[in-house]
Length: 152
Image 1 (cartoon, rainbow, N blue to C red):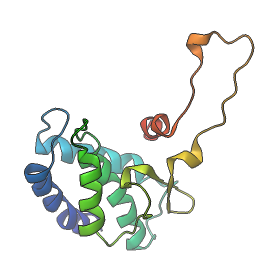
Image 2: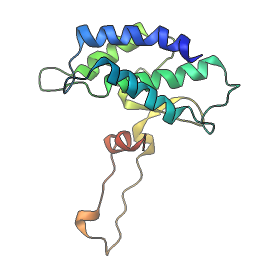
Image 3: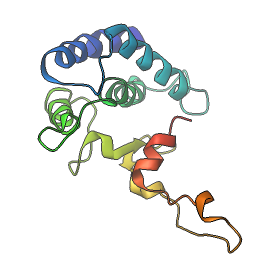
């Protein structure tokens, strides 16, 4: 399964990254591929996916890892948002795995139970603070903090 997916996605992603997008800092191609492999190692666990799972489930996990490995460090400023451009390219060109139409591909996480893409906002815990908690220890979780902690 995985070799077919690498052949299907990685060359197109590398080509697009080289020609169309700007990252926060220069990232060598082999580092993007290493990141993809690391994310796949985190995602393709026995708890998340069985060896007998259909190819489509593997491809769903693979696309999620690709999106973050190649698009996670894209540059954004007042004039350019390369994550939005990447998302537009991805949803136009990589149509095998469907994403919700609202927002960008970065606005969704892969739910391990349903194998569907759901908004990060769905898993933001409600804000509660205990009376004796020092202010500097209080964390107000957002969709962004959930994105940052998903792979840990």
